[in-house]
Image: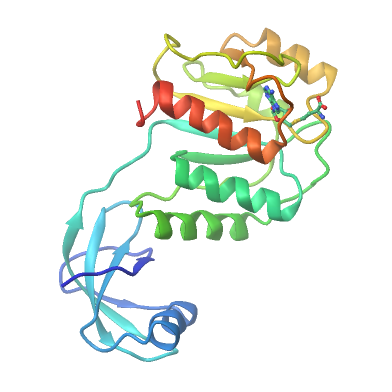
Length: 240
Ligand code: SAH
């Protein structure tokens, strides 16, 4: 029974368990994809790996699945956080989607001195992370935090977490992370206006910060996020 459709369903999983679908999920499975009773679907809740499920009720508004059995184990990404200053809506959505695909474990929008956004729609960003996980075959969904001030985050910084500080003032050859320490890390990307002089000074002096260059050109924040996650994953993460 092949199951190509993947759905995130946040509930407890056990064989034989019934799962009520939301109206949007019911519409997608039975209105758009036209699945029938007994069709197979893959579901995941971010904790229990992937599960094979079967359509019990093909109702376009209130469908029901029955869980059969676990079909794949949970695969968690490396312990990498992405901190970024939110930018325009579509570009922020892009950053969240790519971070989930590239394997960030936690996504943290941060407000910096030059960030325009005063709030983010956390629920909408979380929905983008879920959709990305559904599409890319992941069994884990990175949590998306609410917007916090960068100075607050730095004030409570975990002692053992390295910080890949993407510093646009260091244009030139991209910094190699070969030989960088292992363990928990975070990537930090600034806003379109860059970091303020005060933030730059504080980050440069931070004991866990590793200032890095992403090459000889100034990248837009969304490109910089993808480049930084790629560099980190290929040197220290689960691509290595
Ligand atoms: N307005 C700034 C550029 C900000 S780019 C300026 O003109 O200098 C947005 C963010 O992307 C930066 O804060 C940095 O975190 C990251 N970034 C972009 N290009 C980079 C590069 N070549 N090296 C390191 N970080 C870079």
